[in-house]
Length: 556
Image 1 (cartoon, rainbow, N blue to C red):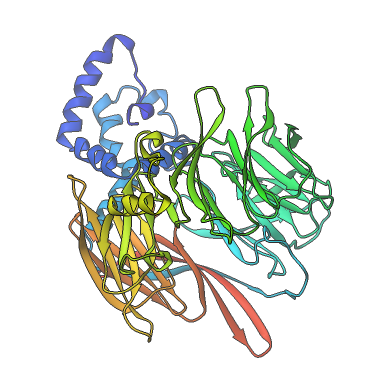
Image 2: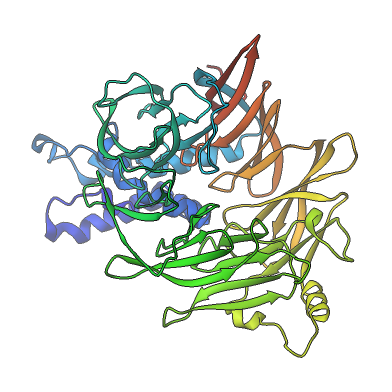
């Protein structure tokens, strides 16, 4: 990552240059910096590598963004480049996280706020339309505030100095506003994909401090969902015809893709793409169909799973093209839990891992399967959270055909790792690396609860690291680096921080009424985005605010 920023004056001097580089690396302890980077979760490292080239080109204050003039070529390699290495964006990011980790307390300062009035929510809408939401671009430099509850939308952009400002959208029909009901930023490109209330899909590009429309799909679209990368789109028209689209090479227009073997049934739920985006799961009326993308760019229906309407749970593994399907009990069937995955020939296989319904989920990095206690049925205590290591081969988890379903379920439950709590667990969140687990549980009817943070040792055993007793939050989640956790209820956002890899504590909080949603800015972890609702008389407003985390001991 460092050498990507360097340039050599004379090829024969490369060896001497590397020797100088080695000495300065030792002097400035860059090995420790890179070791710190290496211990952060893989998801954080991968996301940062994706945006590093983009940052290098756009960050004009970066010492390696602009080449030195020839008049300065006489300056020694050491003085001209190595001395400026601490200014690299990657090391700046690491330095910020390291300083945050050692800081005992935070002070949260409001940085930017935008407020929009509520429009009439009485119009009918489908489940894939966002009522109210915000989304961040992969680089975390763009932020979209949108939803069908709003009269308009807002796009915020963060500059190299960390300042947020609104950017206008130049719609071609000269409309001053537009209700956006679905959106997704394309990965590693400055493209924003939106669906408006009129049913159009627009492709927007950032240029000259505003956004221009570079593509528009005007087909009658009733539902739309984008793939995580923004490369693919699934739409459904009013006749329940499902279409798949691919973004062209210029990232401007949508191209219709061929689909074979798909029966003409409208999908009623969400579309899920696998991590590789070569498979997708489509939920129709009474079955779930898996489509596969071949090398010729054709989607074909490969596998169908019969289910009862609204009675199943299905999620792809976060790291592999494997679909976890939990089919609920019915009067004539006990249900089941199975893993569906393609074999080397591409044919999908089902491996039943529970002979009855059981509410299993994947952990953040897919290393575990777990079940939340308040949804567990059976003789086990409701205070237990159950974990299982994901097997290397799912065939190792195949059930013994000689055992009854009851015996097979009991055997599987006995093999679980049990994390005991004082009350019934109703929420569990793994850190991105699966090294920490945050659980929330009720301890009495007044809503007072316990937040527990569990740590996994190098030997793989789990133990409670921190216990915080307070009003139980509505949601909790970890930051992308895994060094912070966020808790939220309607009147407070709490920031939990890990201190030198040892202890967790409440380092800072935001107190205000009507909080709806809150999250960290993934690649700028010293920022928190909060969405809230306020009312005055008959007027209801929604506010999106960016807060900056600072050291409690420093002044503005």
